[in-house]
Image 1 (cartoon, one colour):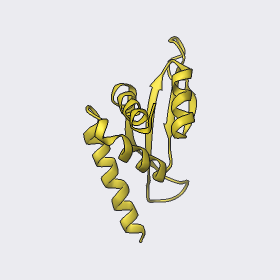
Image 2 (cartoon, rainbow, N blue to C red):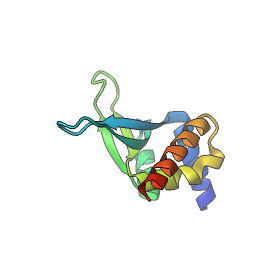
Image 3 (cartoon, rainbow, N blue to C red):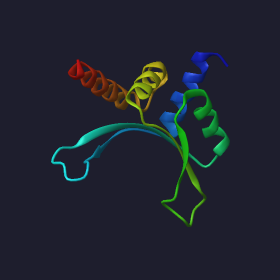
Image 4 (cartoon, helix red, strand yellow):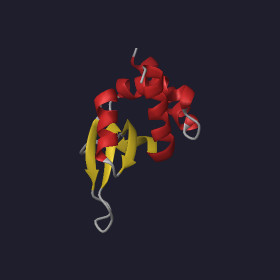
Length: 116
């Protein structure tokens, strides 16, 4: 697979099993919140998620929310720069989550401009 095919595959996984979100976090005893981006794909097949981790970085972790069901795994990317790079690369191939990706890219670019 060439790079474009890898990003098209990633986009398909994000569209079907993924989440593009911001987490609100407040450090202990602080009045303000921090917002942390996340790119997450959930699946029960570890091998498929390990391919994403090997190709695109991030980590694979277990999701213990529903103990009575089959173990769910998460591939997640947490860094601002990494999420920006991945969303820019797979954005042309996103169908369902295209608007989410656009909003996250807008947030990341606004954050970068504010830091200058």
